[in-house]
Length: 377
Image (cartoon, rainbow, N blue to C red):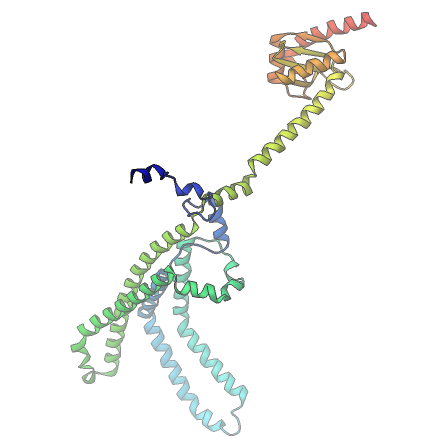
């Protein structure tokens, strides 16, 4: 046994796994992924809350507008009975397709007037509930046809998924609670139901209507409570589905911010190109002011183009050395002035004129150089 223990070498299986490829989604979703999902119409919301509040709104509308609906229904029956003699008279000669269509159109218009308050209540409750859940950002993406929706394999996966199981449990819970609440309400009113034969029709209808509305509102409230539970689950599920692998986070960052290596190479190339252009200006400089070895600043003054001396090249360390070497090769004077070199390097960029506070110091150096150049000439 001891010999076997000596042969066994402990190792970590995660060492052989490639980071992010087929890995678990452990990273929280980025704002970009959530924004893209929102554009696709993928949001966390519960249809149960919408259905529950819409159902509650329907029963409230029923309680508020039942008188209005009753009067309208009575008017419809009176209208139908009033036109029966005319219909009987027209049957055989005057009852045409046009006449029949007109009658049905009038009947449909009267029924729509009765249904209008309930339709408005349903629209308002559905719109406001969805707006509170997901906010206002309409998109047509979910309505676009996708072939993946017709894939039978994906259909079977959805049928036997965890979401389908949760939906089944919610449906069974709703059915149980609906039947239980209805049973309790009817049981409590059982004694009153037995006397329906002994009371007037109007009183009996009012009593039945009261039972239906009260039971419906209780069912709606339970439905809303289940909806809030479902909403909490949908938010958790949506967040869990939106999680990303480490590789996905890296890929998204590269796509949005750019590959750091590529950006670094591009920046390096731009810097090299800028330095080449700058070094080409050194031979035309009038003077190079140094630190003496740490900094170097090349200055040119053309009174026909510039109002003041202009910096055409500057650098530190290795670049300062190259500027000095190029200046020597092309016979450009090199002047050591530590304070002036530091001031020029810190305050003036390439192709910019020097500030007024440095005019005097630079002018003195240029005056000496021009004097020596005239003597040599």
